[in-house]
Length: 392
Image (cartoon, rainbow, N blue to C red; front, top):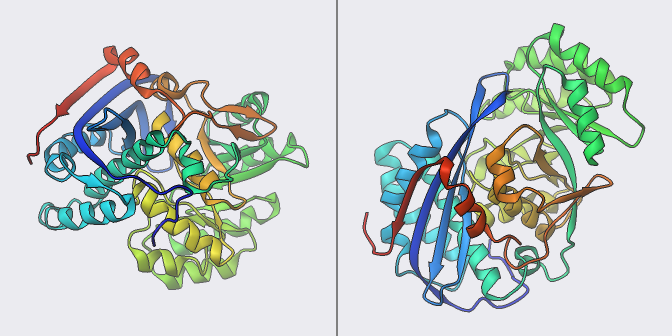
């Protein structure tokens, strides 16, 4: 799918690529049903053109802990020969070219996820650069009348102290909350009871099982969840379970189903529109702006709500917010409320929460001067490479 931007994009030539990784310990780990994050990382990619204009993207990297550093080094090795000297007039076509050129490496190395992730970050950065050159926000480059606000929800609520986390998020201005489940009925159900007991009629509770259950287990579990009035149940089973398993689960519950962050391939996304009520592609995993825009439009065209997935740093969060506003629809922005000094160091305060909505910065591109923030984060930097010549 091509993107009909609100302004024609003037060609620009890339001359520089910077890749940074920062890592910081956290006092309260981020807990999921399959693993725990005891530290937070952010891997950032910056591109610059012959005019000195620049743009930023973020490489996805949560699990395993080493993945941010690995993907950053992979990007520094694989991307220079494709980015340095490249002339870009159509970011979608450029992304397709990059993905095509990386295909052999992807197959040979058996690393489809890392390859897709570095290409997605490059795509984000190219779109950010294009919008900055036109002195317009990324969302308004995608759609001229895109709003400056999008509905948001508080995400990443851990099983321990969940009700207190909801109360804290409510004080910050959130009206929607997502609880992590899949820890057993003795943990999940009391958490749900405690949270629901204090919710108002205009608040919404979502849950995320992080693919914890088998199809057979999920059929039982969704029945137990049916009386809680949930906005959705996210990834109750593995994303790659057969279509028959997802169809059966869709039939077994009246609660909406959400997913998409871990789907791969056009066919998987097309099929899943049959059983998902909320489509959640991740801008750091699935083609950056170019790829997620296409998925989002496909979803909206058949009445499925687009809600971008994101649970990492500030650059990816701002890209997700701009993309949601640029695509349109009634979806919600995922905002991680767990401790993350790197996210806050990059974008802290850039997005304002009021009445359950995220108010984005109004500057060009993603709306933030990331260069200054990155300089401030240098004490936490664990990797940095600058490339000005094609290589790889």
